[in-house]
Image (spheres, one colour):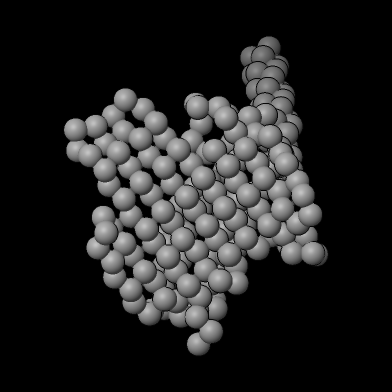
Length: 189
């Protein structure tokens, strides 16, 4: 009889510990969820993931120009992999925990600019232009990575109605300068 009570006590103790752990985990997860559901800055990954879905459904024709180290090629096409095409945009996230408090916000009319002078982070400036109804439609993103091996400057531009561009200039120690430019213009076809 004593053995049965001892085992029942162990089962109750284990169940209580499991329930407590689940409760505290749920509380902690809820706190994390609230932090990401209510970002401090504009949520760029969410916006561009929605644009990827919109463009995938829309299947627009674009005039795409690629320039690599002064060699240029242009082609009219329908892209099938918008996720890959806009990956440079979806990778920019002002709401990373490491970035909290590092951006100054300047607003005027329908434009908001986030600027950082912290050399430890790659994002230098993000400018968002809004429609009168508050919907963002245009983005200008400037990034810079500078270390002992290379320096990279990247400018990303996106306009929901017109198209996008990605310009990257890189100076690599002992290898020199590299650059490329990609521009996609949405066609009315």
